[in-house]
View 1 (cartoon, rainbow, N blue to C red):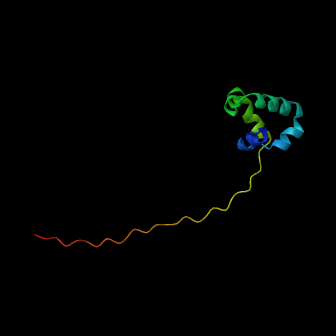
View 2 (tube, helix red, strand yellow):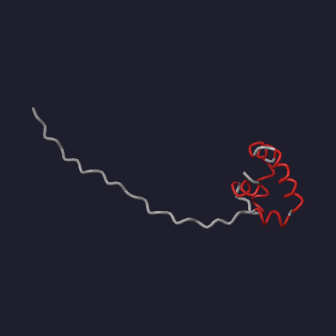
View 3 (cartoon, rainbow, N blue to C red):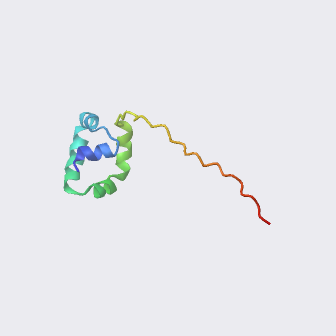
Length: 82
C-alpha cells in the first residue's frame, strides 16, 4: 500500500494535503514507508482526524439501487380436523 492509497482509505485528499502542508506530508510519507499501515495509524491516531477534517476527500455519491422487496407467500388457513 502506498501513502497516497492510505490517505484515500482514510478519506483524506492527498494532493490538497501535500499542497497545503508539504513539510508534514513529507514527514508522514517517510514515516509511512518505514512502518506498516497499522503501526502508522496507531502512532498518528489523534493527528489523522484533524487532517481529515481539513482535507476531506470529495467522493461522488454512488447511485443506490432500489431495494428489492420480497413478498411473503399468502398463507391459507388449514382446516381443523376433530
